[in-house]
Image (cartoon, rainbow, N blue to C red; front, side, top):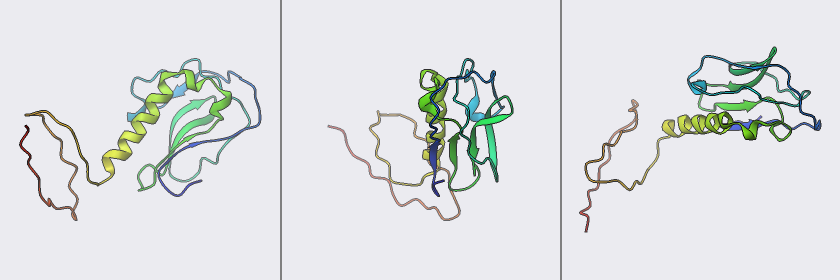
Length: 143
């Protein structure tokens, strides 16, 4: 497994689609309003779901999507099945889950950001930490 924030997709050599049972999402902020019904997965491949994990989706007793190290600086979203041999790419829930995970990562990164904004638009400052300080804000006159 990578040692940095990542979305991890496992690889299998089985090319079968199997409905292992209904996908059961957990109550988690990333799962709000996501519909996983009808998800088909290929059985056989599995990552070790040990350590600090938060399951997001079960199929029977298998954690098929989970967060590894969610409270660390290197969280990982793990798809515990081969997405190539599933219909996950047809479900909007897959794209929304990856987008939500990436968005959470992005909000925790402290970096320079350039935006095109309109006059009077509200801007949300990044969360302050003990080591953060405001360096300065440039103002430009539109023309």
